[in-house]
Length: 264
Image 1: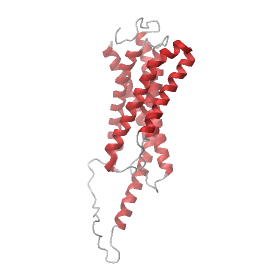
Image 2 (image 1 turned 180 degrees about the horizontal axis):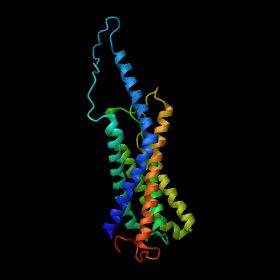
Image 3 (image 1 turned 90 degrees about the vertical axis):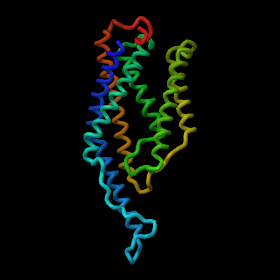
Image 4 (image 1 turned 90 degrees about the horizontal axis):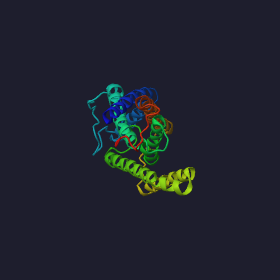
């Protein structure tokens, strides 16, 4: 059964990746092109500024800025490269989603396959993307120092881990809250615990602001909104598609009598 779930999850994830690719081509890539144009203009201006005055001799410490041959063209990056990355990412997330579904199905009260998948997708979007992105939002080319990319990537992954740990703690506390305060109040308290821990992590981790002063705010905003849209489509398609398959696979009356498919 686990193999069937894993295959279905990866399949739905790959299809979700195709939907994300279509969205990215329409709304995301134009912002990337504008950011690259800004980067090239900034590099050209810096090169001209580095030249000596009347003599036209390049100042000491300057660079020739000779044209460098691209290893991968922009056209390949925005088509084959983007498509491969997005679909592979979707398949990987789909596989992890299926394993998580197997672990929690039957442990969420009377929720059926579709409702369970929808809830997991919503929690995944919030905990894996939205909360970490509020601290370290995605940025287009020309934004960020190349020398700090390792640090920025590490901090972002650390924020993702903190968000998931906070979610796990809240999930473990929710049954106790529900037993004492009822379903609604217990759920609200669990959400409050998650948000408090997530905000604490955001306050503790260092902030990063490397946006150039003259970078277009409109391009930056549009790029980040496109990123939100891509993730939203991924998680929505994953939750709805996987829930539909699980409803057919498990049947509306074939709900696990013992908690969790992994042990069933």
